[in-house]
Image 1 (cartoon, rainbow, N blue to C red):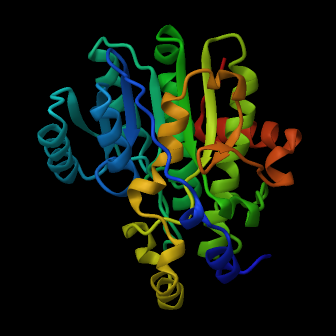
Image 2: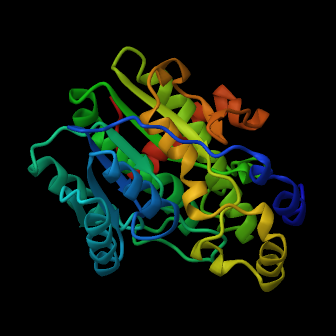
Length: 306
């Protein structure tokens, strides 16, 4: 397995890249962004609101989410920004959030599965899933499942799953997805990010002809409070090589690119970084692994995807 140090110091060359921008408008469109109270998610929500979209911020910490929503409203002048409670570590919360969205009786054109945990100590979700696979993969898998009818009825629509270059370090432990036999925070995180890409590729096949497209995004190495669980050595490395690390605003570029760029439907199921198509690892392109993970995810959640 490639060391985390090598990943951190060699993966991102965004400092040499030209900044991306687009004047595309989203008036009349509705976007959901999970984990939008801070970091990349907040920057994404701010950008979409600036483009005229109705933005629904799905966040675990509702008070922080309301404060962030008020900041965005004040800055953009877009009053159609709302914060809703969403805890991706709790399937009941996901159901309640989805019910709240359906009760709004509005179309949803963009679903951005952004929220996540990074290299945290071993912990389980309310439903008994290891936290990384539970939040980063299963939580968004379940949310997407519940939102699917609304997305199809709102087509053309887009789903964006936030992964990471760290997926290349990942391996799906099909016999120990919850890391109960062996746990390492880096391996658990990498597994969940690989799961994001496999989910994207399998979902794309199932969505052919529906008008709903799905993309996996690597935002790059971004300095946010998500690094708080990393050990001191890694945090110090990030600070030392901060010229290689993106700001949250820069980290949001590729997500926004996939959300607003016209004609991107032909890239359905693709993996994107630095505002363009990129290449995921061989394991992330394994069709049998994607199908098996899909089946296992449905079984763990107790759902049947039509």
